[in-house]
Amino acid sequence: NRTTTELELVNVSASWDEGIGELFEKIKQENKANGQPNCDASLFFTNLYITPVLKNISLYLEKGKMLAVAGSTGSGKSSLLMMILGELVPSEGKIRHSGRISFSPQTPWIMPGTIRDAILFGLTYDEYRYTSVIKACQLEEDFALLPEKDKTLLVEGGVTLSGGQRARLGLARAVYKDADLYLLDAPFTHLDIVTEKEIFEKCVCKLMASKTRIVVTSKLEHLKRADKILLLHNGDCYFYGTFSELQAQRPDFSSLLLG
Ligand code: CTP
Image (tube, helix red, strand yellow):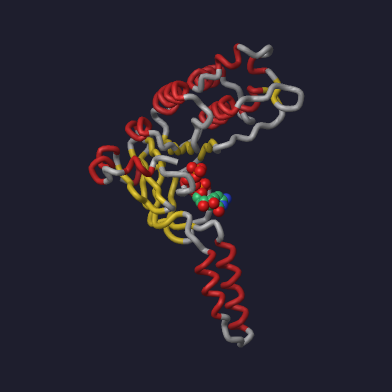
């Protein structure tokens, strides 16, 4: 049903080194225009350098559902988010989504200013919304320990955040923003197991319950809770479907979640 579909990918492939293909294509066209024979090496180099990072990926995500993107390091999880964001242009296939995206990168950038500014990121302060996001991301406890709470200055003469604080701040910023589709790239990096579990529950599952979400995570517990799972392996779709389908179709899947 198209009206309830928020995101659709149809047979999408992409490479990061597209530029090389374009360059050789240009040389080929120039040779042709000048009546020169084409250099056979161009085809050889095109095939050598253009290694697709994502190959023939298809998926759809309905409004309000959660997709977990799993796979070992370098399998293409971040690249998939980049493609949905429009940063990586597909060489083949189609991508369709209906609107505003909020993206939480693996390493969120922090600019000078207060902690609150870093979360609002230019948006207006709404006390109820802000407080629920802060609670769900467990930042309240951190703020309580700071002399000026969330008005404390970051960077330049201010406090330095720990990796886990930075990760939760990045998540809070992405969640505070109102969007149709949320892309959360490994939001639990640097968090201990207990905090990770609580934030997954309170923020990703509860606070974001009605949001369309893509979460990059390879945790078994998270895959169980997701509505759909995409398991990538070297840029290929190793599996796409529900958790019970995953267990039935790919009983050996957990070996791909490590690393
Ligand atoms: N890549 C690239 N240029 C980029 C981003 C990624 O060439 N700007 C390449 C990487 O070198 C890698 C492949 O694309 O070979 C997939 O990377 P990525 O999508 O980041 O993989 P992830 O599954 O997200 O890996 P990780 O879990 O380590 O973040």
